Image (cartoon, rainbow, N blue to C red; front, side):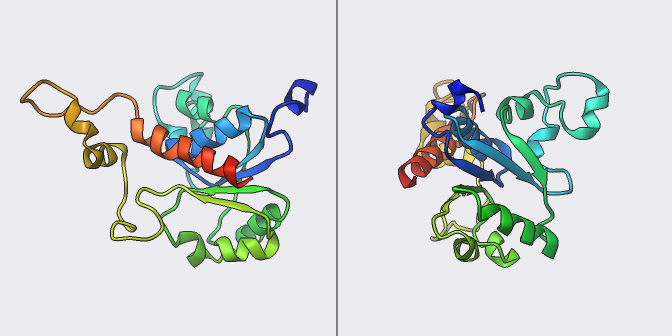
Length: 197
């Protein structure tokens, strides 16, 4: 760690990032920019879906590694990465060993997925009682919409923001930027993590 990095407010914080796509990736990027050490934990299949999202950067030889997506590169600068198969005992045990030495775990699975895999909050807390566990989900951990998949357009429609776009008396037009994923997902998660710390 450089001297400048040691002066950042989260320089003594270690984060395990099990998320995919924009909200979790941007949350852990902000934590990394504030000095946190972030380890991105991806599955052994295709990893984070953002790895394959255009626009692409670099050469075709990088495509097989999933390191050609400009969005993936932007969201994951300054992070380290490891691949674990959480459907296998060895992968789950590796995650639990890592969690014992980390301060924060971010996840973006549907509610109950990590519990079903045997590495949910209660299990992680047994290994590390002080771990800050942040679940970034579309509709929260409880309630009538818990099991629904959530996308930026859904959230904008539910809050009425989607109705503020487009031509008068015409159809709504979705913003090119993902407003809810960043504002309601990434920023709120980063704030919650810092408050919990």
